[in-house]
Image 1 (cartoon, helix red, strand yellow):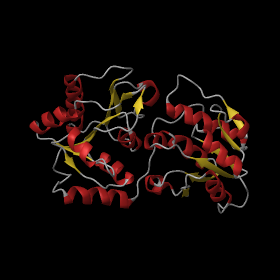
Image 2 (tube, rainbow, N blue to C red):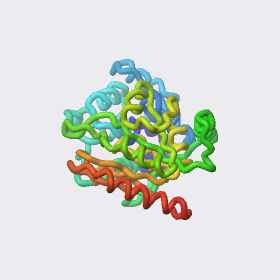
Image 3 (cartoon, one colour):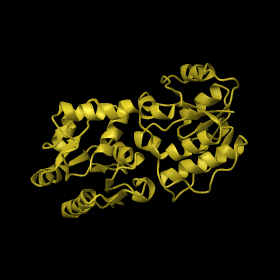
Image 4 (tube, one colour):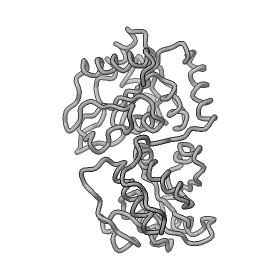
Amino acid sequence: MNLIVRLPNWIGDVCMALPALRALDASGVRLHLIGKRWASDLLAAHHWPVTSTPTSLLASAAILRSLPIDSPGRGLLLTNSLSSAAVFRLAGIAALGHRGDGRSLLLGRALPKPTGLHEVEVFWRLACKAADWIGLPALPGQPPAALGLRLTPEHEASALAALRLAGIDSAATRLIVLGPLSVGTTDGQSKRWSGFAELARQLADRGIVTLTCPGPGEEEAAMVAAPSAIALPGLGLGAYAALCRLADLTVANDSGPMHLAAAVDAPVIGIFGPSSPARTRPWGSRSTWLGGDGVWPELPTVVAQVDRRMRRSDSGET
């Protein structure tokens, strides 16, 4: 059985969908992923084919119809947009997804989106329904404790090469990755904590090297947000995740970098303000968070949490 999966549009959401994707893959279904171009690098070690599509609905539908699969297969939408449902309908692929935004008539099976759950659990429930819909063995009732992103040797080599280029010996340096940027808003409010510049300065006083990994066009914003941090621009997402795993700690806004660190089970502190940790906190046993639901954490609270995590790292604790 082929299952054509429309991935979410955001890095963090793709990371949070990993348990669902891995469970479906382990059940024997052949996954064909549709998503952004960066998803190919991020998911390279999982060996799932990833196809990116243009913005045109008709052109996207034509690409889906041309996928090299033996049968039409069925679809699973991890997005909530009307356009993604329309593309699958135009391609003649019956898709399962959440109703809303006028999508019900376009879906092969429409489900209500649950409330009060973490997004990992939301994606997991979709996978459970999809497994039942296409006749796979039932999935466990709850998602696993880890997101389970795999990395390739090339990802790890790229992260080490970036550190060497910056003159950093990762084996002899205490490193913290900072994620001071965040795309989008929650209820019209920025998800960027204003304390990263001072946090980086205080960490430098402790002999800790801080790093940022700005994406294309983010270089200036990252420098403004954390001017004393060393910028490593141009890293692919897999290499970025590998860097988080090499570092002692990642401290990031509610953003893609926070979820990248959690995805490889690296120690991470998520910084929340207007958004809700109940829905998007970093997932995993080595993850924690501060603030949220309209309240930003104070700088001393963040510094104290970083100090605790670094002491655990220095002592070899997880």
